[in-house]
Length: 216
Ligand code: DX5
Ligand code: ZN
Image (cartoon, rainbow, N blue to C red; front, side):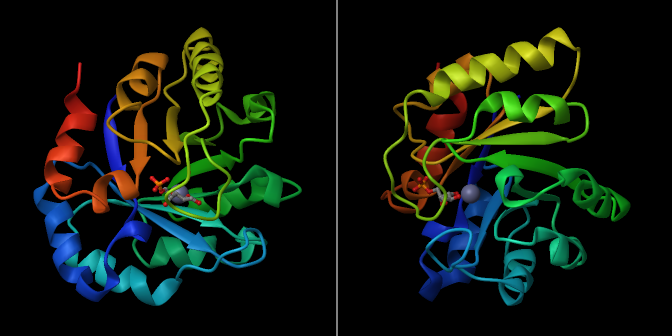
């Protein structure tokens, strides 16, 4: 699969409705929603109140990426707020399984995420228990960082493991994705690419989305 999920974190919040309508018209597949708590990551983004305008002005499914401690306290509220997918960090919790169950019980898709300093082997026991894994290609916390090239090998490793076991778990990549590395990521076996500054920071976001999605 080759899906593009623009990260609304990089949008112009002064013109949020316009930005969301632009994404709705584009070939983007999902809207990526970065929630930061200032504790798990050294930055605070936004919380529940913005789920409403995201839903109202964006026709794309909302892909919620929780960069927070104690995701178990909040996942159900994000599900109720209209998330299509809810993901949290493996390294933020002791046991992800009961939290995945909370999300599944709401009929929402699940995602487990790891930062670049967490071995991808740690995701392997969960590959058949989630709809998607998210490999961070920068350290979670800020948009506009430089892509970590070693991510490509991690994608190949997880892809091989998913294919060997005949699973349909998706692989998402988040951080520093742009028109220069999107093709290589898809070729390595990624299914979903998150892009913040490479979409909202360009003159022609619609074209950037098209390029990342269809570039050969
Ligand atoms: C980083 C967030 C990313 C970020 C991506 O903590 O999880 O989703 O917004 O932004 P870019 O594409 O600019 O690296
Ligand atoms: Zn993200």
